[in-house]
Amino acid sequence: MLSHEETIKFLRLAKNGDDKAKEKLIVENTSLIKCIVKRFTGRGVEYDDLFQLGAIGLMKAISNFDEKFEVKFSTYAVPMIIGEIKRFLRDDGAIKVSRIIKGLSVKINQYVEECRLNGQKSPTIEELAQKFQVDKEDVALAIGSLSKPVSLYEKVNEDGEKAIELIDKLAGDDKEEDLIDNIMLKQLISKLSQKERKIIVLRYYEDRTQSEIAKELGVSQVQVSRLESKIIEKLKSKM
Image (cartoon, rainbow, N blue to C red):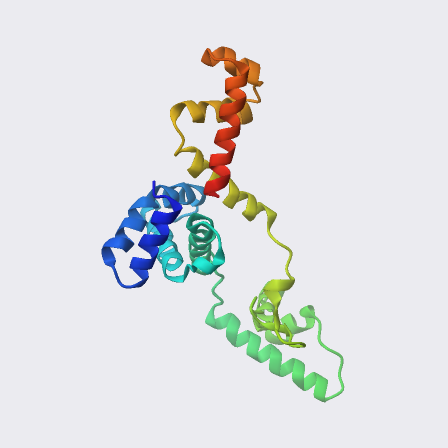
């Protein structure tokens, strides 16, 4: 596993066109991609395709990472990898509106506008269904297809020096943040020694006391306490 300093060195080389440095970063982060990909299996996309998407996300992270961010590369890369996969799943699974529905939506729009100009009340879904001799469900779908999707990056407030985008006004996704944290923690724990991993698993996943762990490992509780503190500090330094 590359240290933070080594990672920065390879990132600098990669940004300067060093393909071997870029390949090194990809190889060193392969387990990270695999860990993330596992969370998205079973959604109708082959594992290899998901992995390729994750690799693309990693490549983007390598290209866009800036040392001024003052974060570990893995901290920056995880959401980039997840974002690339989620973007594909979202776009590939988007609802495709048929040409018939699109044509119906145009007719409905024209008819509603005529009613407005003639001072008539807006027709109901039932009336529109009768007018165009279609099912009410088709009318509802056609009306829905008229709505223009709103971009998350649309400017909603241009007062002041910096415009605010819609995405800035949305509440954070705690579940996604938890997912990112869990993936990173699992990745870091996998890099610990066998003894260190056992202490963390027993202490935080099986809720054992330090005394119980000491007895199982054949050491004193003081030793377990010191080891636990060192492990926690090691994990924090990698985040």
